[in-house]
Each structure stands twice: as C-alpha cells, then as structure tokens.
Image 1 (tube, helix red, strand yellow):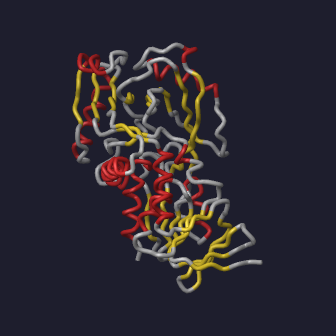
Image 2: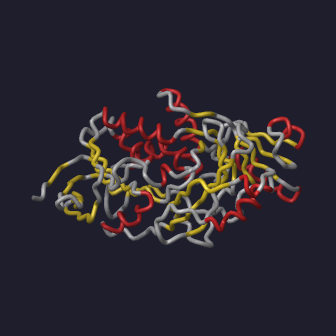
Image 3: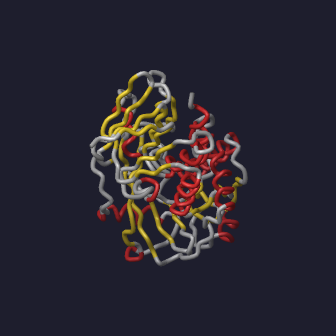
Length: 363
C-alpha cells in the first residue's frame, strides 16, 4: 500500500554534499529526510577520490569553485580538529619539470594571490631537494594549506551530527518521479510507490543530479561522466608532500599526481577520460600513460606501479570544453528546488561551504 509522508526538506543523495547540507539545515528545519538509492552513504564520487584538502589556487577569481574551496578549506580543517577526524596538513609542491613549464607556475602563483590563498611561495631546485630529495623539478610552487583527510570519517561524522539533530535517513530508496502542485513537490520512490511531500528539495545526487533535475522539468544541465584511475607503489613511501605536475591546460584535470594516505602509502593519479557506463573496473592499457607522467617528476620502474582504484567525476564540462564552474542554484521556475550540480574536485574540500551557501539561497 502506498504511503504519503510530509517533510520540510528532502535531500536527494547522501554523499559528502548531501550529508553536509543535512547537517547544516538541521539547525533551521525540524523535519528533514535524506534519501539515498545505495545501502549506505558516499558510495560513488565521495569515496572514489584523492581525499585531498585543496587550497583554491587552480580556479579563476570570482568562480564559485574558488570561493567555496578557499572557505571550505578553513571549515574542513576546523571540522576535522573538532571531531578528531584523521587528517594532515602536509602541503604540496606543484612542480615544473623543465624551464618551459615555469611560466605556468608563475601564473598559478599570481592566481593564488588573487584568490586569497594563504601560505604560497615559489621555491627553487635546491630547496625542493631539501624537502623532497627524490623529486625531479626545476622550480616548484609550495602550497602549505593543502592536506589530506579521511573522507569516510568525515561522512560518518556528518551523518552522526545530522541524525543527532533529528534528520531521517532513508537508504536503499530511489526517487523515480517528481511532480509539483501549488509549490509542493511530490517525490515518488521505488518503495511501494510511496510519496514524500515537501516544499524544499535539495538535489545533491552527484552523478545523477541532471537526471533528478529533469524529473521536474529542469533540463539545463548535462552531467558528463569522467573516469579517473589510480596506481599504487611500495616505493617512495613516507613522502612529506603531495607532488603535482603543472595542470592540464584545458582544465580537464590537475594531472597525474602523488596521492598520500595517512599511513604513509603512495598512489598516483588520477588520469581523466570520458565514459558512458558506470564501472569502477580498471583499464590497464593506460599504464604507459601513468609510467610516463610519473617519471617526469619521480623515478619509478615499470614493475613498481600496479592498479589500485578508480573513480568517476560528475563533470558539467563536456569533452573539448574549457572550465565549468559548480552550479548551486534555486530554480526560478521551480522555487526551492535547489540543484547542486557538477560537484567534482574540489567538492570534498568545499562540502561544508557548499552546505552554508545552499542554506543561504533557500527562499
């Protein structure tokens, strides 16, 4: 038998963003439900990434990615300290491996200053050798506010905070259709066609955020799935800093970089290529790309890297397109249907800031 439930707010998607929004709004609304089609939180983008706390240096001044990354960086470190979430402010080196790449570092340095990123400095070959002797570079941009964090623990704490504040979580439940009448949204689920009624919908559905928006007639977005792979190694353990190459000029990704874990382990990745199907299988014929990219800044043997994991980014940027910003908007035709779309990197860093921003645009 179909049941009808009423809530003040319905949040679709229990990734980092959906959980952060649930926690943020729980201080304002008494009756919130968080709906997730998987059996637990963060099964896709939020758990298949580099777990890096970014600084905000890469994105154009004035972009939402920039504003929310710089703000989110501070918020996430405070959150991690408050709740004893494993993290480390290790910093990173963005390295030029030849003189021809050095002007890109100069541009990033100037952009970082415009974006109010703190703790950035340019260092030369001798200082690089003192910090990371194994790294091959002619010059580097040292970004001190970059770090690493246990994203699963972040999500656990966000969920716990939301639950303690009375938020209802509904897992293993998919939204199949959305209707609107008299400013009330009726969301049909795949559980006995049960209906959830609400005045406020937060679409934080990640890889499927465009599909959810289309259910109510908002066809402004197209999410492009962009896969990234990681390789692991037992060599170069206990490096101090994250090492990044100069970024891809098209802005598709940040380049194949080192990925430190909190136990001293080392991964490399991710690369980037667009896909049509959701699969976390590894495409091992990309190993030559990794081998070549890593050896530009770090000596490593062919047999010293092996497949590790993959992830898929929800990009608004189509193949061949340039930078696309986050979209976080309260739709004009569908009041209080708030779409949070295209949240790829730096989504982890920005999640708490995204939640605050979302709270501010509810009418």
